[in-house]
Amino acid sequence: MNDLIDLRSDTVTRPTAEMLDAMMQAPVGDIQYGDDPTVNALEERVAALLGKQRAIWMPSGTMTNQVALRLLTRPGDDIIVSREAHSVWHESGASAANAGVQLTEIGTDGTFTVDEMRRAIKPTGNSVFPPTTLMQIENTHNRMGGNVFPQDQVDALCQVAKELGLATYLDGARLWNASVAQGVSLDQLAAPFDMVGVSFSKGLGAPGGSLLALNEQSWSAAERWRRMYGGAMRQVGYFAAAADYALTNNLGRLGEDHQNARLIGLHLSKSKHVSIDLASLQTNIVVFNLTGSLSAKDIIGAAKARGVLINALGPHRLRMLTHCDVTKAECQHAAEVIFEEIDKRASG
Ligand SMILES: *Cc1c(COP(=O)(O)O)cnc(C)c1O
Image 1 (cartoon, rainbow, N blue to C red):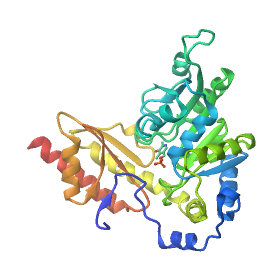
Image 2: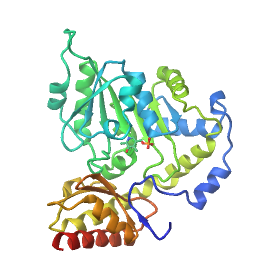
Image 3: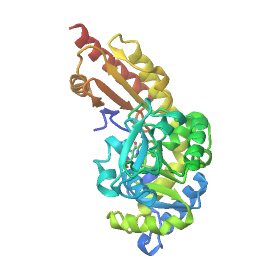
Image 4: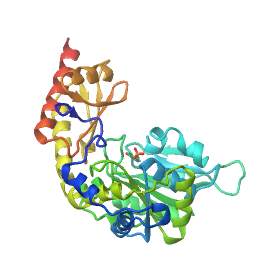
């Protein structure tokens, strides 16, 4: 596996020897009795980082999103989300199946404006309309190329949502990247939201885990939903130790991933068969389109034969992610391979 350059996702990283060592040494207990000291410490650390009263461990980012929905909505509610949100595309229809809500996608590039939100919120006082009860933001935005949601816009949206009686949720699986890219603290990014989810299995390089930050009153209901969804594990401290290690050691290096993604994007932008929004090269995700009839599948196959793994987001749309297991030189090489394979097919 090691000679492959795997840019399919930032979830593909493997724990380093140091991270494994931290895991091996973690004191653990049964989280359902509340006595895993490593999990308790991580929950406190993350709650403090995000400026919330509490945080609760979840096995995955998807479960974090799903539990938040159960806490903040009722079946039949209407939820405002960004175009191509993770909850729409990557959660197997869970929001409809579990929370019984409908998702209304707005905006274009993973962000949206106050005006777009106001127009999407269903009127109250008429029984034909589903009640719009939650506004959800994804920061950074996965399918839109790791775009950062500008914080002044986030603040304005949350304020209007609050005025209109909507709850607010931040899907911050990659909030770490948003913080590093803008030089804005995590608690400032999280401040306007009722609840915030973050993930450790993405750019931070841990093998799993996510936390939902919320207020004191919501904690036990969150714990119950975690149990109902089958996500209440036991000696989770081993995972929490990896997450804690990642916060201490890997958060500070995310800027390298952003530079490497930019390097890939800029190289590909020189191809006349690639269409890429250079403004979207803000964090560790590169999304681009093949022009003409070039097929994403063909490029993926050709790249794989040369040891470079990437993913498709559509018939002509591709995605590459940088992370702590790929170097700048490997990213440069991968960009050259993709460029050549595209060029070969387009002119051949
Ligand atoms: C990865 C991701 C999640 C959660 O994914 P899991 O694979 O369930 O951990 C949630 N939101 C966004 C934006 C993501 O990219």
